[in-house]
Structure formats: C-alpha cells, structure tokens
Image (cartoon, rainbow, N blue to C red):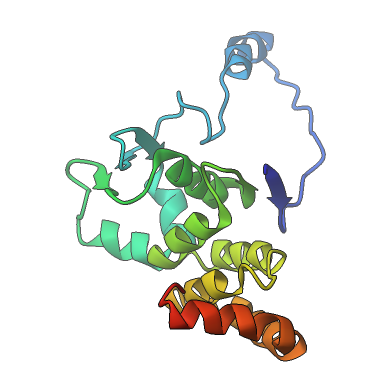
Amino acid sequence: MNKRKVVGVHRLPRVRVLSETPCLSADLLFLRKYEVSPLCKDFRGDIKFVGSNGEEVYAHKFILVERSMVFRRMFDVDMGKESGIVECPDVGAPVLRSMVNFCYTADIEFTDEAPAEEMLKIAHTYQIDYLKVVCEDELVEDIDKESFCRLLLLARKYDAKLLSEELEDYFRESFDDVYPVFAKRLCRDDL
C-alpha cells in the first residue's frame, strides 16, 4: 500500500562550487554520510514531537511556522518553546514523521503506518493546507460504494471540501449502487 506522491517539487540542477581552499571541500565531505531527511530516526531539530507510543520526532521551528499558522501561533505564545516538546498523544510517530517530512519536502508517502486518513487528520489539526489537499486527492481515488460512508464522515469531520464535492458527484452518479449500502449502514447506525 506504499504510495508516493511528489507534488510541486522542483529540483534544481546540481551546482559544483569550487572552493579556493581545497581543505574546506575535504572538510565538508563528512556531511555526505548523514541522512538529512526528517524520515530518518537520527534526524534532530529544535522541536520534539512526542507521539502516542512515546517515540520522538524532531523538526525545526522555522520550517513548521512557514507551513502552518497553528505552529506559528503555538511557537509565538511560547507553547513548547521552553521545553521544546510538543505532546501528540493521539498521533503515532510514523504520522508525525510523515507530516514533518512533508513540511520540509512537499513529499508524502502514504503507508499502512501513515495512511491518507491519518494524514488528513493531522493536516486539519495543524492547518497544513497543502498537505490536506494532497490527502484529499489521495482519498478521492478510493471512492467506491464500500468506502463512501467512511469517506463522507472524514470529509465532514475534517472540512475536506474537495473530498466532499467528489463524494457528492459520486453519490449522484452511482445512486443505485451507493444508496442501499448507505441506507443499510444508516439503519444499523454503522456509518
């Protein structure tokens, strides 16, 4: 179920910088052995998220505040500033790691540990609008008569406008297929 989406990322051509001091180039070679991705467990930053299982995920404030008004307000009012810790008791570390990675790279990989539904939830919580759009786009691909009710609840709960519109269109186009499943679940209160 691993799906990788790269959205709006532009790669610049590699530029070789020649240093007047050959020692500087040699001295900086050690950086190549470090993985700089936020998905790496050895990644460190000035903010630490603590997930539901107690696992820690690090990030840099200056990246997060550019992607989310919630983070901007959170760090402006010193929440988590002194301790540098943001508790997330209802979110697992893989979801936090994917969110942080998206803030850095605009790259998302939906997995069993970080599914689109959970990523939509965290995107809504922290108002990371672009991540929310990418999650909605992924969920739209899964619309069918069996997933309709679940996705409708997600769309309403997390104010997912694109997903709601697509669900409405699907309902109109596939009414005869969707309505019996929807009515059955509604009667059982199993939406």
